[in-house]
Amino acid sequence: MASDCFELMMTKLIDIKEIFGRLKPDEFSKSMEQGVLLLMDSIINETANEYMPYVWKRLPNAVKDEIVVLADHESPKFLTAFMTDMQENVHEVMDLKFMCVTECVQNKQLLINIFKEVGEKEFIFIKHSGFYFGFLFGLLQMIIWFFYNGAFVLPICGFIVGFATNWVALKVIFLPTEPIKLWGGYEILGLFLKRQEEVSETFARVNCVEIMNTKAIWESVLNGPKRQNFFAMLRAHSIVFTENMVGGLRPVAITAMGPARFAAMKEDIATKIMEKLPTIIDQSYEYSTYALDMENTLCVKMQSLTKKEFERVLHPVFEEDEFTLVVVGAFLGALAGFLQMIILYTD
Image (cartoon, rainbow, N blue to C red; front, side):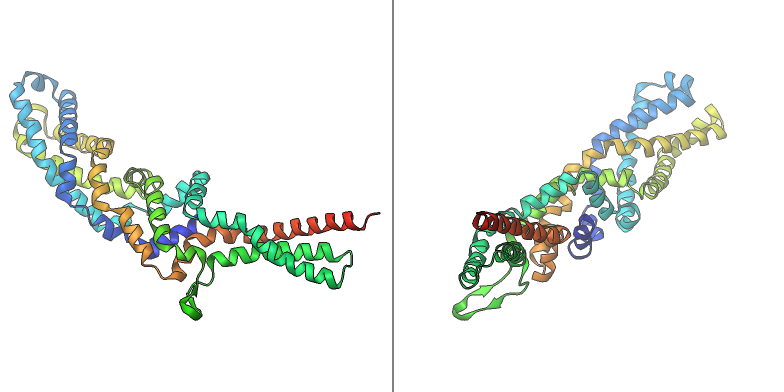
């Protein structure tokens, strides 16, 4: 059920490359600016104390601050290049369908809550339809009973009425998928399909709050099945960033620690950046949510679906249990008819 629903979303509603392309790399970099400055201050101090503690402790604070400022000056180029690379290769680092389906499988109640809210009016209709359709089919049973009142008529008619009541109720919700014009300007259309605009707004809001929010998207990138691609990309850019940052210090650093240790220090800095940058990615959430505009995109795309395509949004929820619903209705109808038979024909 979850897979079918999100398959529709990925193929008809969401182009993740187009949506991720809405992020402006320079704006993304600005949203991370303060966090990166503090992060680089921590990494530089930690690494310098490890590789050249004697020299680092004796450097004036002004010089140390200058090194951190240099790192801060290089960080926008680093983040901009990294985000541009991610946008161009977003399918290599993100699997949005996997994220959505996994979340729903791990938290089944979440998917149930989504469809309960989206299909609230349809569920109410099913609950009340037993009275409406049961009454109409009951009238037919009464006519049959009038002409032939054999004992077995009651459970058989009860079975048919119970079956037909639930079957018709389910069909009325989703059929017809295209409007059928009637005399006088009236038209017949599935009840769910009549609410396409309203349902689209609700579905988009609930999905983007509960599943496809910015935090969940980034967590999927960092921990999902394609995380190795993401960290390989981040590592490549971290190495370039480190080279640009410490390049000016090469003569002094090599003199202080030797070329081999200097190379190891650069590698260590790049590794620390790769490991620690994800810990401050939450500083980009506000900007990313605004730029991605997922809720509005999903809503507009859903509203533009054809009626037949839109029918596939909620119908899969019922399809898996449609037969069960109809059989249960038939069983209860037969049971009611059997009890009637016992009451009427038992002396």
